[in-house]
Length: 152
Image 1 (cartoon, one colour):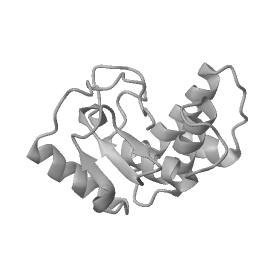
Image 2: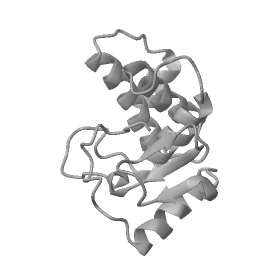
Image 3: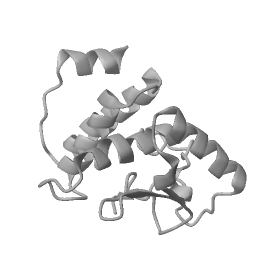
């Protein structure tokens, strides 16, 4: 399983209530994610499980709006996009799970390929991708398209 926000969003021990689940399910549908692969309040973190082809959704999908870190305050839709259009899109590939390359690719792929994302959600995912590379000490060039998406 992949830990999207490295545990620094809302606590994974937060249980989603029926209202949260209904809202998150609607958000998933709005970006083309089949809701039958979402499993709520199961496991310890929100993340894609490639062998089961499921996205476990826990309380840590909720943003920490008190944080200034883009990864902590991404919308639930952006988090779901990262898991589905990022990690699921590259099931069983050679890049090791949980590495900066895996997380970079997931956020960038989600930003570029998820339908119906708001421009701010795309921007958040791109910034997250490049922050992950920077945290790893890797230098990754930004294309003109990436810069345009970041800067609006």
